[in-house]
Length: 375
Image 1 (cartoon, rainbow, N blue to C red):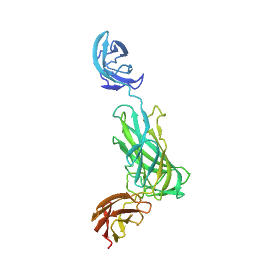
Image 2 (tube, rainbow, N blue to C red):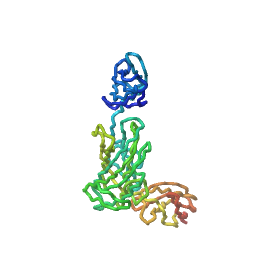
Image 3 (cartoon, one colour):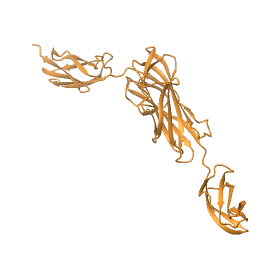
Image 4 (tube, rainbow, N blue to C red):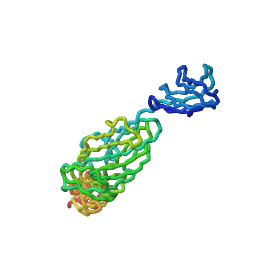
């Protein structure tokens, strides 16, 4: 007797082909599983038979098919019945926003240039463990430029291949950046206008393992100049103002796989509001004024430091440390104002020379002060 070594029971009424040979010709063969009669078949003139038999719904396991002729056991064969595979169900849930890789709850945040905004989701496809499944995914971010200057802000399409990724790693079949549902090429520029929400999208396709939970990360945008960061879009300066973001992700099983529950295939984030403020520019120059001065002892002397960046603009909020060495040693620190300037004053009770130095980010400016006694 012969039949496939293994059979997967997919639903009540599934059938397999059972074949037998070496039996007496023209006799009735009764097939049993456990103690239950399964089916009956008559052999041909060669003592062989073929019969399509309905597989009984039994718990997973290996069973024995017994073939009886006239109540006498004639042959046996194992039948491996596997459990009914769990139904396939693709689901996705919003997990969190991140700012520069740090998870943040929804709310209002102040950010500067060189900031990266991501959205994280938890994704799962229920089904037979370790079996592969193919999915199409579409994600979109709604950008609402609430207020600020200028009237429209500029964007740059990066569409970096790693801008959408999964943990554990999975095979990505393709990735397209889209604008209002229309595909856009890398290095494309476009604008969003104040009080006119716009959709930025990305379409991907994946090969995932069933019964595996994935964390999906969408590196939506980088705030600042055109970059090679692993993001989908650059928000270009000048971009001071307030924007509101909503991220949505959708998943869809590709045929022939069928999703038994379509109610959990879409996930929407809460609103993330960002107030974009001018960046603190890196200091490249510090000056000290006056560079030389004379004062009588027991008076006050003032010096003013000015900190600028590479394009000559003042650096706001830079911490400057003043050090006095010589006749009247002292030390003091403070931050530059909106003009990039800070003034330091100190008292000189002793006659002699002081060397004054101002320090910021490894830069130094120096001045000399002479104290004298009036005669």
